[in-house]
Amino acid sequence: MPITEDKETLRIYLQDGKTCTIENGIVFPGHLDTADDVIAGGTAISTEYILTAVTEDVSALSRGSTITVDSVKYTVRENLLTDDGSFSQVLLSKT
Image 1 (cartoon, rainbow, N blue to C red):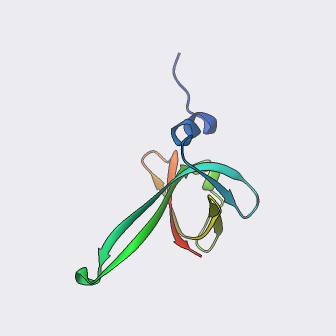
Image 2: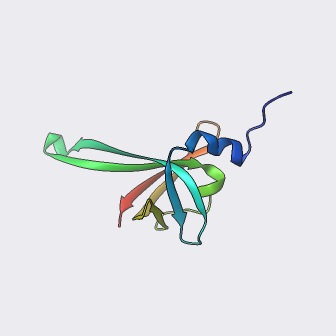
């Protein structure tokens, strides 16, 4: 019997992640990366906020949308599909 990955099965990969809430009250798990990036020829450091979530959970997010991740508000910069489209990476800015 083949394994079918639906939204609930995919969420298992994110079960130890952060609690995310979209403006319309939808709550789902996500993994937030906060990687530093050296920019401006090495003269400045910028923090990138990248949320990985099940695509179906974040499909309504577009540039300018608001999302809360563990009580911190962010604004969506981009919403990008990854690999086979089951997961998305949402690029965020702190609000």
